[in-house]
Length: 249
Image (cartoon, rainbow, N blue to C red; front, side):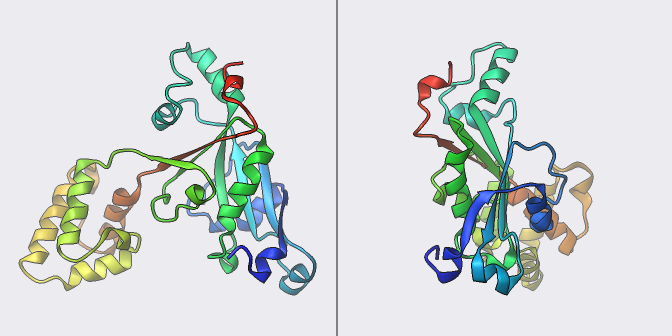
């Protein structure tokens, strides 16, 4: 896809907050951006710019890393552990940058542009380690396609049990990103499958406080699926131009 005629007319360049504002509404989180370290934009050139009138096709935002992440410790073999808090924070801030947002205009999706933004900009940040957390990483693994290595937390038992139960009535894991579809399939179930799934859903919701008594409906299905799929994937990339020995220096 990256060799298509449209892709050849796009270039990755240093961006600014206006590039993010142009596409921010398309991001699933739709929350304030907060502090950031760098922004790069994917912009059309020449005739494509004139024809489309679009100034920003994609944007990637880098920020400072979170102070501590369990999956980071696993991915780095405990490289940032065993220090006092101040030293650990200083090492993390010196050596790691985090990808905060990757957004592509919906009119230009399915062209591999998110992968391109990640792959081309990571070296430009010039940090020994780049990391990212992606809630939808298991569904759209463009970070992995860009060269980052994924790490996933173990699936909670309650989630595994409900996913298996749904599979038993013909609703597979890859379909769980579509609440309307899943809700429609559940509504079509007849006894005893309908009773079986209703019992499993109610059992699943017992772990979610005031949500435990939600009435059957599309809103409940959306909530249940958000908990089944809300399992961030941690991604990491080690800059080959920055040696591991630099990390402690």
